[in-house]
Length: 198
Image 1: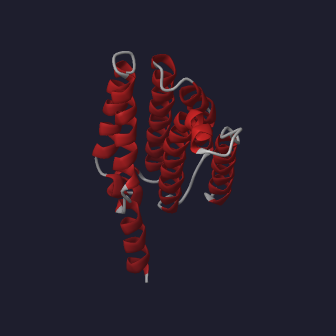
Image 2: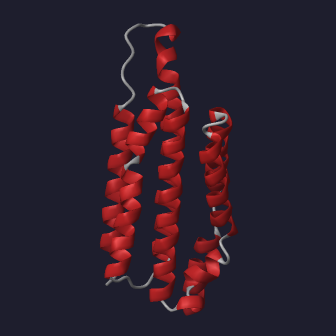
């Protein structure tokens, strides 16, 4: 089974999620900057979640470019990832509407960490099904230090949401910033494979 349908379906779901999130930005009643003030926390959470969904979309695309074959387990692992991503409009809206209060900020982090774990599971299954240690994907991600560090930071941020929710939010932003820097490992591995085949 090739990856084209899986990638097309996932792209469509992520596009819908971004659309749902932007619909949470209500048009303000008023024509001055004061009317925009209540929307500021909602806008900030939208930007953070938009970036996170963009990161998943980008990395998911690159991962599938390095994937030759998929099976039923990979399809279910992908649906698991999409499930946690599909909760992002809800957790985003809840955190923004409540101005980053403790519980919504922690729940947002739980959604982020479960999406990250789901992505790691998907990546692991793809590597195993496509030849284990000798796959392009495994060579590209290596020991995945960035992924493991993200999980640690998310865990700390979830706990800190009940101590200082702004530090927690800052840690979520930090993880997004780390992943926002383009990760060229998979791209390089795929292109080096193409050039060696010629």
